Image 1 (cartoon, helix red, strand yellow):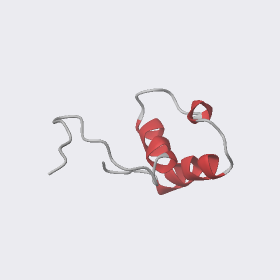
Image 2: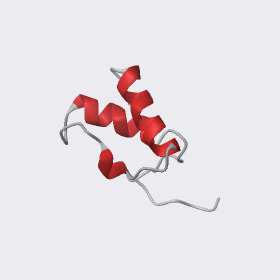
Image 3: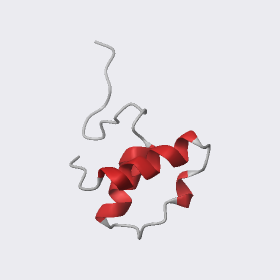
Length: 57
């Protein structure tokens, strides 16, 4: 994902580090700022692959 605003991404990261829920995202759903904020919030989570099932091989 391409982040447009590192500042907004840092806000999301800080919110998670402060123990806040993702529902505190102050940006409108679907906006680039919201996506950047969520990118920061989930920076330390494993990326999920939804286009195929996981395998053990």
